[in-house]
Image (tube, rainbow, N blue to C red):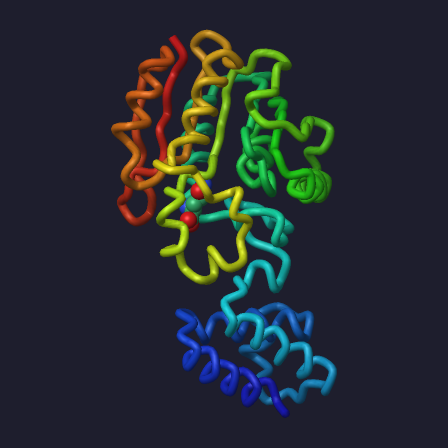
Length: 280
Ligand code: GLN
């Protein structure tokens, strides 16, 4: 069978299974199956593929049809300017989260030698992207999942920042180390009762402990704010990702803990997504 026939059959199959982007997904999975760039596929539609590659391709397509995210199938995801290794132990980096990087870079434009803490570091996409762009910053990442720290370590090694990054398996409540200039976090913030309404790709495959924010969706965010008020230096910044409807409640929690709200930033879909605050 040639590439074109295989890809077209896969597209129809994925479409029938209600996958939203059947054309793109089939092309990406073909490029994974034959270990070539996506562009190669487009320019080599008439090329025959081996039985072994076809078998692997069909397996990937069937996994995708069941909802498994493409990023987990190809074991990587681009975020900011970099490629991160991902697997089922970490949340897949979202384009919306890139606004946190933009805000941190704006706040720290003329700053040197800052110490950053990322609470719930996961794949490391936020902290590692900042360390890549700010060559004299130092990072500490904590996470309750040992497996996510293993993935973060691989990413920090691949992207050359391992020497400026420390990782600890810890809950924020049990982390007492030093004071930080800047704290970032994309904690789990989905209301427990709403988890079941998330897309199948998300709730069926991504780590629940990275999504579940408790009864009101605010348990983890509150914990991060409470402890950050002790772990942050005076005039230090706390940059949080939040749920689209959590702005007012999170602002209140921040103000109660002595933070001044500098700004709330909207994501690509125009939802409130990031709160930048300063410890006063
Ligand atoms: N934005 C994520 C989603 O797609 C949620 C991430 C989080 O809880 N931190 O559902």
